[in-house]
Amino acid sequence: MAPSILRHPSLGNILKLINRAGDKILLKNIIGTTGIIVSQIGLGTVKWGRTTGVKYKTAFTLPEDHALCDLLAIASDCGINLLDTAPAYGVSEERLGKLLKNQRKNWVISTKAGEEWVNDASRFDFSKAGLEASVNRSLRRLHTDYLDIVLVHSNGEDLKLIHEEAVFETLDRLKEAGKIRAFGMSTKTIAGGLATIDQTDLAMVSFNAAYTDERPVLTYANEKNKGIFIKKALSSGHLQAPSLQFALNEPGVTSVIIGTINPTHLRENTAQTELAVKKKQ
Ligand SMILES: NC(=O)c1ccc[n+]([C@@H]2O[C@H](COP(=O)([O-])OP(=O)(O)OC[C@H]3O[C@@H](n4cnc5c(N)ncnc54)[C@H](OP(=O)(O)O)[C@@H]3O)[C@@H](O)[C@H]2O)c1
Picture 1 (cartoon, helix red, strand yellow):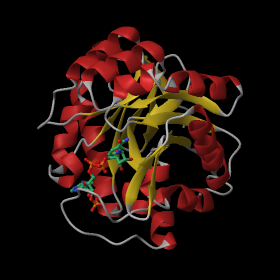
Picture 2 (tube, protein in one colour):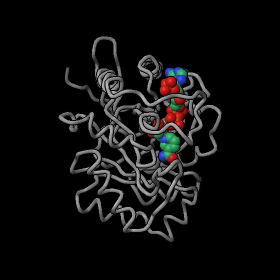
Picture 3 (cartoon, protein in one colour):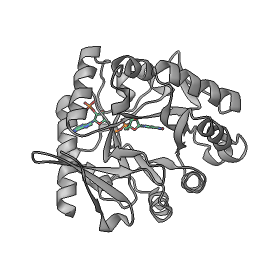
Picture 4 (cartoon, helix red, strand yellow):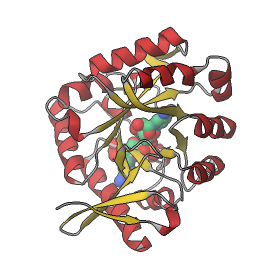
């Protein structure tokens, strides 16, 4: 069925598209002024490519390809079109590239640059050459000729990366060259989040029922009509699924990126999202 369109009162001027399939209602949002349309929840893929140096509640092993294939099919069926990956997520990009063959155009892919995961340790390079090489490598790994979104994968020194490494100038040139459609930063500070909103298309920010420190970034993005991706909405698995509603209800949030390798959790997270939408209507 064709999507219907409405404006949501609590989210100001942001255009909303609704997909209806039976009882399912999943909103789609536009990332700021980019024209890129993403589902209200996205799929995070840390656990698709890396098992060490993570803070999840329980240990896990990397899923087989067929399990990830099933997960993508369920996500698509649920109305999810946004995938979040990164070179720092081990083999996540390569695996996505392989699994998304022939369905690239169905997905909005968000990846990162500046951090990679080598021999069980993070390696950072925010130089112009380093970011360009990272974006070119992501294009190859993902078997695509464009990346929808590239976020600077901050090491915590958000403002230094912006002012001294001039990371946004590099990404802006890559955008002009047509290699990426939108860019921003996955930030770790309020000041960095605010500067990112001023200078780019979107910021990715930690926010959940137990951690609201970075709310000023969300509020500012809402005022400026810029995008916000939420990371750690379930506090890396330390909160239960209904806590998703907290992040989903926050004004200014474009999409909540939830990491999962469990199909039941994926469906549960979609159900929580639909519930949050219904409560607002
Ligand atoms: N840019 C950055 O610096 C950065 C940092 C962290 C994360 N991220 C991105 O944001 C995404 C989300 O962050 P995150 O993965 O750290 O944290 P999260 O989404 O808060 O939590 C993911 C954890 O919650 C569990 N979970 C998911 N749905 C659940 C449900 N319905 N019931 C119970 N448990 C559930 C998952 O386990 P199961 O697999 O068993 O479902 C997983 O262990 C990441 O995947 C990544 O894409 C970015």
